[in-house]
Length: 266
Image (cartoon, rainbow, N blue to C red; front, side, top):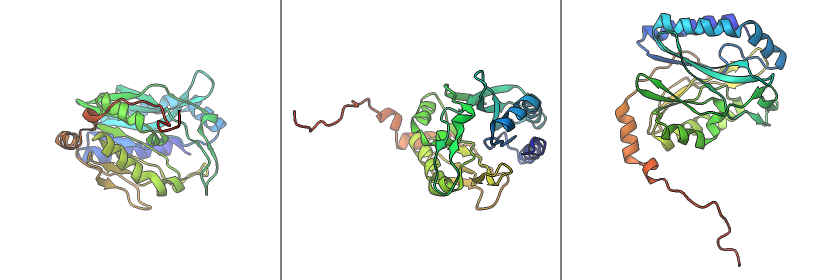
């Protein structure tokens, strides 16, 4: 849980991405500090968060790319924290931020219970950022299980959906790829998902398997089991148009009644 080491890793990723001509780089959820308890989060927010944000902005500027910091903890007015994603532009300015809406409160077989709401407050606002004229819809990890958020992002102009994550191993094996591909297919968007992987100092194990998926639901880049590093894929706006013209879900969508039991005896 060494924030300085993690920042050095992100710096190297920026350098590698810039060398490959990448214009947009995403790093996982809690990429700077993956603290587990309230005290660890509080110490990071008080002592390191502001400086980390400045360093990340400088990285984006130095390497002339959009840097999407999957998330990091920031202070909330309630005394808890917010799980916030940041997008910095090539000029070093903050383009957008997004606070994770859906908090992971779950009991997963084979893993310790998760209660994200114990330490975090939920966000309330969906965000689509502009990246050189491309709509970038922002989400984080557990948000992936809530398709209405992604439908809303699509309707608001998203062409790329982003899902930086720290998925558990059991849920990752069962659902990660299926959910990512479903969100791409439903919306006709690219999906970019940088994921934490391996055993962490806080005792957690995460699934990894970062992926980039095209608007037809095909995995076009991925990290395989046990691997980590930079994956790269091109954005093609024509593929977005093609997927949406072939299956025009937005045009075909209809309002409907929520009433049930139509066949019940009167």
